[in-house]
Image (cartoon, rainbow, N blue to C red; front, side, top):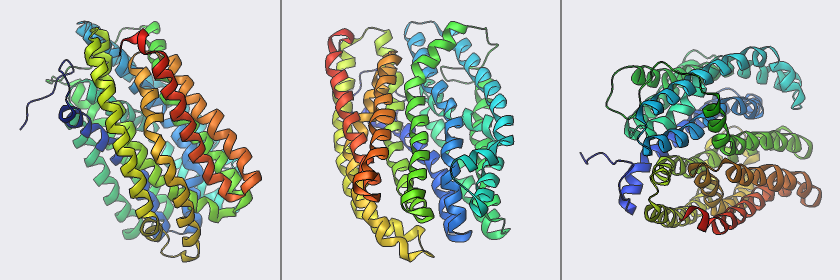
Length: 444
């Protein structure tokens, strides 16, 4: 087995890929939870049930990404603290973040469960679609505290120099999800309720095991200890992670707007096609997010240690990796357009031409997604949450939201697909401009 890579090392392309690969795979498997649910629901429950999952999932995702905010922002702060050789304080911060986020999740769970029917109705659901959306949402939200921990610990495993262990936990949870989906939906014939129960139980696997690991003596950089209240650190953590939370939450909010627009322009069939596109987007974006999450603590460490030469090295090599990966994703998306659509539309073949057409348009966005994601994460790692948040805000609330509201007026349903490409292109340009302007300030 190759020796463990430490945050303090000089990173070659090989070390970068070895260090970030577990984080990438973790994010891909986490995204597969949703994709696997979609596959089983689409083919073994029904089209309306599939539309219900796609309709309510953005709302649930907004709640879950609270954990992403604490994980990204906390990792940047903790890694910087480790770079400053304050190991005891790093553990106290780690423990405080885990405990505080759990309490916040419990506070969100109760009203979310109670008002789930009203939320689904506000999204435009009625009749059977409303009933199915409420059913899935109420079962899934019961696992919200564990889901928030899943997001957090994916990041904290990397900061603790244990990305491989984090990968093992995520893979095991993903396999558990597949097995439970098959058992509950096909075996027990629980339909949509089975899919929701499978996902909820999966979050317990992915969230509770890391809690046990970090609570015991271990050989990582982090351990759960008795936390000490530090309001300033929590605010800094939320500020650092606000951009990533904004990106995820705003992306989910924009997804809600997409669903509303699609109900208007294409009906329930449009939501089904959009769900397929988002499954591919989830997986591809997870690769970029996973890389950014994996390299983030390294950037934070060298920033805290004032190793400016290594910051330049990390930025240059990362941009090269992202450019090559973006081109590969574009080609792969074009190639998978027909087979992937056919896989989910076994009983809805009439939707296949429209799905393939939408894939051909949206695949162009993958040429720019990597730069949009990495530029925001780069400034989070530098503990500049303001710039990172601004990039995320522009990407979602300005570029994507504006496009999805305006372009359909000009191009109909195609305007909805084009808006994805427009938003990613403009966000990549904005991120590049900020990286160029602030280069001297951070010496990268």
